[in-house]
Length: 241
Ligand code: CAA
Image (cartoon, rainbow, N blue to C red; front, side, top):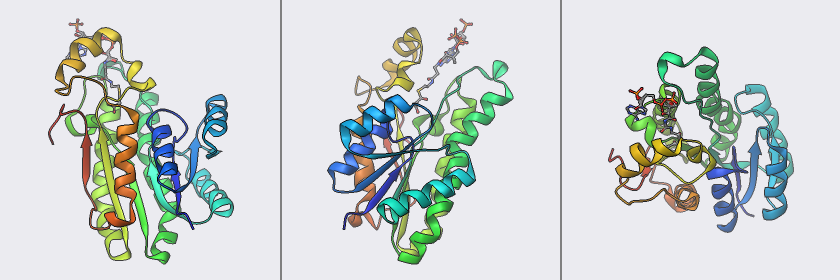
């Protein structure tokens, strides 16, 4: 039987590439989304991947959502915590809502989702959790105090939970993408992207979503059991952590 993989924010951007890469690798995939019904419907029709709508910052919604996925597809053995948002503003203009939205969607969600699958993974002595952090959680980024804090938190979460999962066959790793050609990066003002970001990417281009998808498939593999607590940088050489 194919292992079941659940990808949060799995119908658009990097998440879409992760969902399709896992499907191509033979997993039975479920993708969550938060609000864009049209994009999720298109994604489902194009890929045949089941989509589920809930808010990953809501603990009870995650519990209920995971129960529904498990009833439909079977126990979740691979969880990819990918869902994330940006609310970029210089700190002197960042308000509490922008802070809270990013921390709850990008970091609280890891608690909510991982807690919902953890007991099952422990009881089966197998699990893979792959968290999508960011280069900006490693190096910080002007205009992203909220996002950088959340994404740095993702790395700490990964390292701590990896220690707890190790004896139970559960690995917990994270990927830190650099600037990948998705809507999120395209929202960065063109002049900022050209002047402040692209010149710092030695590979000389934005990354492709599929390059993150393949990294996740690698970490999710049954044969990746000795890799845990690690941070895999996929950033074109922009930051060497
Ligand atoms: N370093 C130093 N100074 C900077 C700077 C930087 N990176 N970016 C902007 N500034 C300076 C500008 O030069 C400007 O200075 P002056 O007033 O002296 O001219 C000042 O800050 C204001 O800049 P803006 O006119 O751009 O101000 P703004 O309020 O319109 O926008 C901003 C500010 C929202 C931070 C905008 O610059 C921005 O979006 N920057 C990009 C942030 C970024 O990289 N986000 C990543 C998104 S992709 C992602 O998050 C995915 C991932 O994981 C990688």
